[in-house]
Amino acid sequence: MFEPYFKNDTYDTLENAKRSFLDIISLGSRWYFVSRYVDVIVKARSLSLKGLYDDKAWAQSSYNVLKSVEACGGKVHIMGLNNLRSITQPVVFISNHMSVLETFLFPCMIAPLIKVTYVVKDSLITHPLFGPVMKSRDPIVVSRTNPREDFITVMTQGKELLDKGISVIIFPQSTRTAEFIPEQFNSMGIKLAKEANVPVVPIAIKTDFWENGKIIKDVGPIKRKQPIYVKFSQPITINGAGKAEHKAIIDFISENLKRWNEQTSI
Image (cartoon, rainbow, N blue to C red; front, side, top):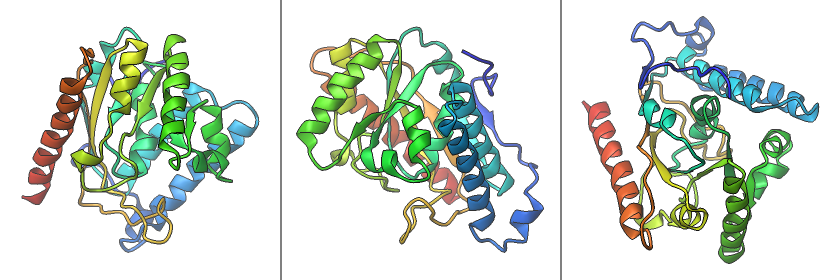
């Protein structure tokens, strides 16, 4: 792999981190952040079309998005990075899904240490801007319209990837939402890990710094006072049907979200 961006178990944006002057004069709008985000994507798309968008370039794009967050006053808090370093085999990462932001932040944390890809919906593959970037990552593509076919696709392609040493990131929620609803958190990731005989690594995230848009979902407003949290659990081995492990993942996410929400409401 390659040199990681983070050296310790945790990472926290400095309290005195300077906000960009261009963001300050944007008068609280989202547009400076969006302009930096689009610049990252356009450059990534160009490299992808040239066949030059490798894991290192992907991680760098991700890190550039993280620094854009900080340039706009966002505070990033990452925990459990030593749990990533402890991984010695491919795993299934299972995360809640709050906004588009976590999709762009995960690679700079994971990709320097572990070869990884996503399960994504087909609309991202055909998107004129994101499409070439997502295709370059060789993701597992699902339709979100036929659950049975999607399940077969994830089980088949996911196992093939895991057998080749490539970890998989799954968002079991059907859509991005600020509220975590356990009943809408399916067990597909658990089933894939059991089928491939690999551990799962739960990830709890709070990324409502960048809200979902009402008109364009991927370009919502940003909330500078909302800290960003990412926490990686230790790997969990699946035993039996995996019901206990599924509950453990839900509890891990719920408990961390509760703690973070209480901290931000003070």
